Length: 389
Image (cartoon, rainbow, N blue to C red; front, side, top):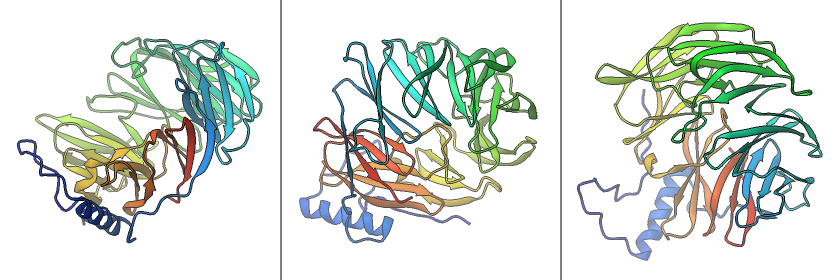
């Protein structure tokens, strides 16, 4: 049975062929914020979230999160530097600071006690991945591939070079890597191209989906195949299919329509299929529900049965904050407040959407870090807001 949650503004969203209504007066905007917050969280006003002051960030710096580390990469330090701060106590001095090779961009993942820092060029192609100690930043090893953290191991892949969609597919081989030495533990060839995903939670498993639909579930430590099957033609990518709640969930066309289909893991037996409207559809894991967003709103499916848990028509007006790949936490959403300056914060998970509070004006470059929201502020500093999700 669907649960309809209408948490939109009372004036609604204008249709595409209509002129938008006049902006509400200031008293109307205040009433609007109160109404949204009362519906979402049961409170009478959006409370300003308690915050923790973080480190200063130079203007061109890159802000990254890896495990419990908040990383600030300063490309203008000559050579570039990475400063590692404790995300639970961001006001403290950095745990360590090291020089790194010049690059146009960086990304980071935590694999146990090892930090995997990937460097990219101006075309966003991988230059190399360097492994460093999470404790002190000391270099451990370096490989000329993209790395994925997989529990107490890692997986190395060679990305297909693409100017439009770098990192979407891999080619050549998928290799298991020893975190201590960087040596290859096992290797599986990829005949054409494939999509690689690390499944959340232990045991560490790696999903490899070839462009012909052949899907295999591998042990990240030794490469042993624990499941194998075939998927229907689909737009395979880093977010399709996804492992959610012990099932593999795929969006795919069905003739003139489209559907979402779930398969159990590791057996990859088809369990259910539900029709969905054609067009853009985003699926995410939110507290082990299949949380979907299309032009009609947001809604959630039970991954075991395909039944709808809740529906939120007004959810399209909220922006999803980026988080760790394969995360299972509630989603964090942002939307400009009615005053046009501050920002409302909400979470969405098993119980549907809830407003958590309000952020000050001027926040940018926000990202999810476990139970925390991390953003830049106008004073060139990082601020951390703990979230009770």
